[in-house]
Amino acid sequence: MADDKVFRGLMTALVTPFDDDQSIDKKAWEKHLDYQLEGGVDGLVVCGTTGESPTFSDEEFEYLVKSAVKKAGGKCPVIAGSGTNATNKSIHRSKIARDAGADGLLIVAPYYNKPTQRGLVKHYTTIADAVDIPLIVYNVPGRTSVNILPHTVAELARHPNTVAVKEASGNISQVMDVIDAVPHDFTVLSGDDAMTQPLIPTGGHGVISVASNALPAPMRAWLDSLRAGDFPAAREQLRPLLPVFEATFAEPNPIPVKAACALMGLMELHYRLPLVPPTERTLNQLRQVLQPFGVLEEAA
Image 1 (cartoon, helix red, strand yellow):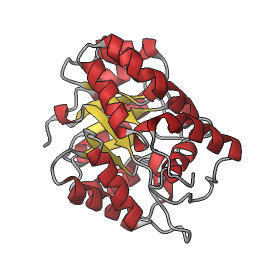
Image 2 (cartoon, one colour; image 1 turned 45 degrees about the horizontal axis):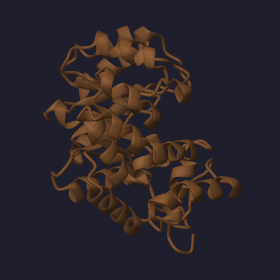
Image 3 (cartoon, helix red, strand yellow; image 1 turned 180 degrees about the vertical axis):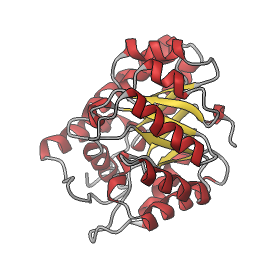
């Protein structure tokens, strides 16, 4: 089993490039993985909802995990988003991820079902019992309509396979309650780029980032300052990033951040329905906020 401490720092929730026929663009995928590793990320999160995972077949899921593991080559962990709103399907996907070489699993709270807190405990512990690699609980009530409460996270943290939580509730008070409720060696990660600045000083350990798809190196520098306690430097590094955080959520994720990657020449602008390309207004906003970083393709 991987050490839970490897799931700390900057990890990118990777977008998935597609060709115009809706198949995975394998060449662009390899290019994007290289870009992330060159940018110094601490982990690759593959097949999360930012990657449009609900649209994947098992074969596509397996390919994406295997190729990321091969590309990482042990330099950083690969975490697979194997959570669904069906416990048995989540176990099935988790076993595929394990066999494909993933170092850990990211399990989103069941969406649409709206389980009780007791149901959440049963869901997560059943998965953790079934697959012997570390599991990260993912709380994002704005997308799932269920909030994993601090006392539930604390109960889940007792399971030896449950090593971390990705907290995207948007409620810093709740995040602080989570940090207080869990053991000191349990990892608390921000699931919201903008929430990372207050989370790190209060005991958080890193971020699973959307914006680092486009800007891994600036995000890594900012997070390094935060984790070193150099808060004046971190505030200055955050200034140009804040407009990027805003722009990458101008429309539902991952529409804008994938468009940002396309504007940078990392991939083509293709989505799988029901997602569609962003408006020209969003594209112009993305161009404006990315321009200071010098990453735009000339034609963009």
